[in-house]
Image (cartoon, rainbow, N blue to C red):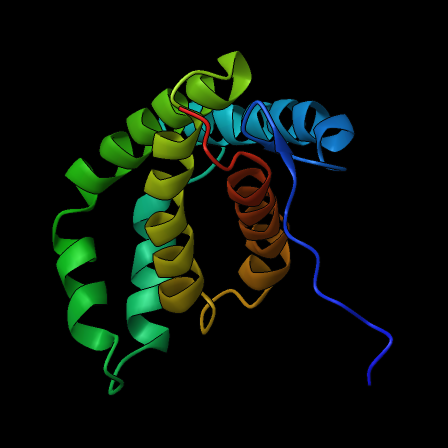
Length: 147
C-alpha cells in the first residue's frame, strides 16, 4: 500500500484552497503588466509590431509557420491595434476581477501563438511570455467554479 493518497480539491466560494492568498497579487501584477503591454502596442516608437512580425516571418520561412506569419504581416496594420485593444480589455478584466475566466481563456491562445510565431526570431519571447502563461494557468486553476 502506498502512503500517499489523492485528496479532492477543496473549494470555498469557487477558489481552490491554499491559492487564495496568491490569487489577487498574481491577478493584479500580471493584469497591470499586460495592460501596459496593450497600451504600448499603439506606439510605434516603443514597440513596432510590424517590424517584429517581419522578423518572425523571415525566421519562420520554410516552416509550417511561414503562412500564418505571412498572413499576420500582410494585415499588421490591423493586427497591432486589435491585439492592443484585446490586451487592454482582457487586463481590465484581470484588474477588476470581472469576467476573469473569459479573459484568461482569451489570452491563452494569443500567448501560445506569440510564443510559436516569435520564438525563432526573438527567443527571449519564451522567457517573457512563459511567466504570463503560468500566471494565466494559475488563475484558471485557482478560480474553479468562479464567474
